[in-house]
Structure formats: structure tokens, C-alpha cells
Length: 293
Figure: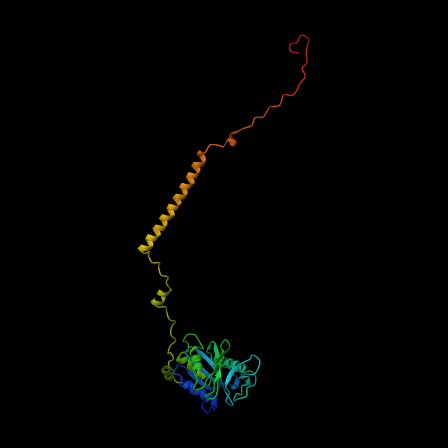
């Protein structure tokens, strides 16, 4: 990684340790140290790191004494290490996260005024303890795009992991864009040859097209033809089912024929006769010499 330090910069011990970490890391990137950005150079930014995939702004904090233990970052209080206030080498007015957000905003505005679209800019607070001191956890996510890292020259694993994955965008930062951003931020501009040798692209690469192998992985394979054993088993199951249906039909037909052959029960054929009632009486008028009267 290329490291560019402004001429006459007065780096603290923690910042010098941070520079040593970056220089020992074999990855493509440019680290700009000790920048002054914002309106009339009103804000000092410890470091801005540009990689082919994005930009991150770093605030580097050292310690006054050897403090080791568990790092605690409350939302509205001082940072502590094993329940003791973290004693940084520089006095910080307010929350370190707020200070980092202001630095990120100042870098973004500076690049936009130079007609450079920076995209999303991440931010990280790098805590640099004394060598041989362990502060855990070595990485804490504060919010999307904001992290806290613990790193020194002997334990820079989390810093390397962060620089590899803080931005998952495409390789949009070419050598020319990086050189223009360095000039806009007022840093020492690396030459195009240095950027190309470090691994930056001369031209933004096109989006990769899916290969034939990738397309084959997404194609749903056609079902395999059934084997001979599977075919035989299927026909056997079909024959058993058909035989069962025939047996059921025979049983039903036999039951219907048996029921129709039985004689009707006596109680079903016996009928009862009803005696008719006599006709109603009607008086007959009799005349003289009338028979049957």
C-alpha cells in the first residue's frame, strides 16, 4: 500500500505506528496522512484511505499509558477499558464517533466540490495501544459504515480484514480518479505509474458477464429417465391396485345378487283387511200397494 504524508506533518506516536501497519500490508491502496479539509482547511483528518473499491476516513487514537482489557463503547458516555476511562493521547471534545462523522462529511464535501463523486464513504476509529497490550474486542461495529478497530504493528489482523472488506462495490476507482482525489484533498499526489504499479486499474473494468459455467449452475437439470428397476416396481404396484379394485367389485356384485335372491319376509307380504262400514240409513217413502215396503 502506498502511504503519502504531507510535507512537514507532525505525526503522533500512534499515527507513526499506524503508518507502519499500512506500509507492511501488501494490498492495493493509497493512504493520505495529516490532511486539512473543509472550509478554509478548518478540519484536520488523520487519514484517508483510497482503494479500488471505495474510500474510508480514519481517526487514529493512541493511549497515554498501557491499558489492556475489555473495550466498552456506550452510546452516550465515555469509552472505557475494563471499567476504567480510556485515556487517549489527545483530548477529544465530545463523542469520538461524532468527530469521525464530521471528518467523513468534510471529506465528502471536499471531493464533491472538485466534481468527484465519492459515493459512500466509510469511517473507522483506529485505537493503537502500546505494543504487547491486548484490548478486546479488536473490532466493533458502531452503525452501518462506522467501525472501531484495535491495531498496532504486532497485531494488525483486524485492520487488514477491514481494509479488504470495508467496501463491497465494484472497482470504480481507477488510477486517474485516485490522482484527482488526492489533488482535491490537498495531499501529495502519487504518479500514475506508482498507482498502476500498486494495482489500480488504468480503465474502469466492465461488469463481468456470466460465464457458461455460471449459467450451467443456474439451469435446472432435466429429470433423469426412470431405471428398469423403478419401471418394474411401478408396474407391480399398478397391477396390485388393479387387482384390488376387481376384488372389491366382485364382492359388491355378489352382495347385490344375494340380497335380490332372498324371498320377501312374511311380515312384508301379509296385508290386513278392513271391514267396510254400513251405508248410512235413509228412510224410504211407501205408497199404497207398493211391494217391499
